[in-house]
Picture 1 (cartoon, rainbow, N blue to C red):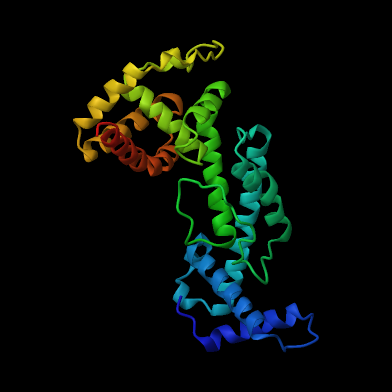
Picture 2 (cartoon, rainbow, N blue to C red):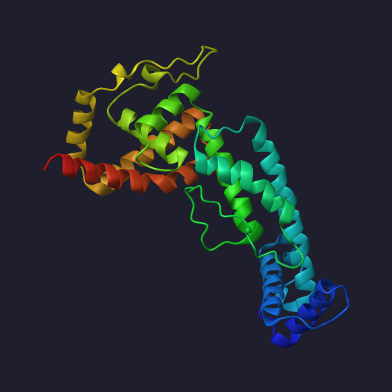
Length: 285
């Protein structure tokens, strides 16, 4: 929607009145800029909202688009909080301080202080835990909701493995990534790539058998050398395609081929392929 300044100024003026509790319309330039950002954020939310499809947005007034946007922001906050509360009962940070801080400590701060009316564009919290999706272009509830949705996918992925295996994989591969999902996926790909059966390191999904994690003897230097030799003989494009095939097979078997999870994990595959290929080149110098 290409709203003009003449259309936006009255909306900002009304917000300014509410901000000053109708005692004054005089606000600082910085505050006016903040309120204009709030209006534009909500109008953009209206553009993304299915509600705006009820009529062509070009035929809707800026005021109406803003009101639709405010309602969309409010709905997304409720949706984000519902998803957050759904994750909490089974949430595990596996000892990762960044995830613990971002999800358990900072998220409640966001929901407590998020200002839908006067500053919806403010994300408020740092979100230092690195997820596998680039959210740098997002702010406010858009960023928060997508972050929570990514954590939901990560927790679902990690719960597919015995907790002891996840902890061991994180310990072995700790230097690879600060993202838990990427670290475990790295370990999984390495093992499958060298021909290890999942049952050999404790992952079973058939029946009700207890998950068992065997000793580190199931992952030895000979296996890794075979994997390195194979990587040396492959082009990087072929490695990426193979790793994607591994991940697709994995999600199909253990997560009922959840396309959303597959797309999320795909964000880590290229990096894992490139770094494994690079590590192989260095080790052979």
